[in-house]
Length: 384
Image: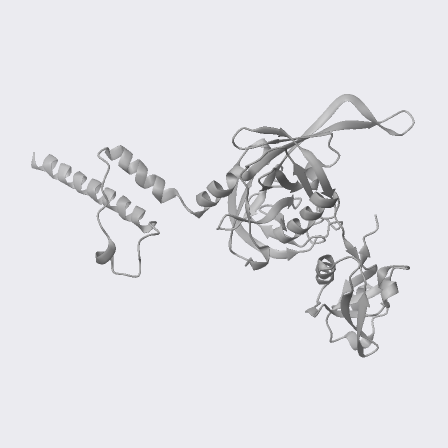
């Protein structure tokens, strides 16, 4: 009898200890508690619910509500599903391409609302060549979408739906990101709506060549947060629930590698698409390579010997009748600065040119014939 009684006492002790531990775990997440003062001064026993099961559920709910859940709760209502329908085309008897009557293919992607009146950002490849675009919200609302503009060079597009008082996202800054910090992705991968994945920022400033899309003019954010087909166009968030990028690409044959367009690029391009229906891309008209040891051996262009210990971007060709030719650039010029920003590799040139304005002078510092020369060039519109 004494053994049974001892087991009862021991079990009761464990139960009390377990509940106490749960209460202490919940208290640790109480942001109102001043942790700078001793425990005995600011801790008070919480009032327990009379129903033990309900009280344990309350404690567990509080314990599991982390920064990811908070970010999703903040942004989730503004993330949308985009369905696009395209008419299938096929080769006719004469070798031309003709619509296949009655046959359509559909695709699914993601997007997010940036204005209460229904302005949505997504990827260009989600909706390009579509005959119809529909948008569904998390709360079940369903709308026909109007495509205001598509920009293939940045893989961005803007869609408008006829609505008001819609939930919107908060935009952050990708330029403040640090490799290794948390990243959260929301979207509709593989048709599974409102899917959330989390990881870290794996790298910053990935060039389009590095990830296998050389026709794009973007410096990508790399993340290991799972991004699958259907995530395209959805937001990448920081721990504050702010949008820092647009999920856009998965590198072929890779595990755990996803890429996002920085939100600053998305803002700039989306404003142009919404107001003009197209994006303007400043253009100089040069062919260039990053100056390094390989430049001296892998190119037929004669690299001056005085460049051996220098860094910058080497111009190997100036396009005839281009802004660069009119501005006075020469093959063999070594670009070292643009608008007083140091240039080390070709993506630096691309970034600075993208930030410039068409028709306004751009100051470029080059090294030429052992002299420093400042060239004033006026960027033009990228040729179609």
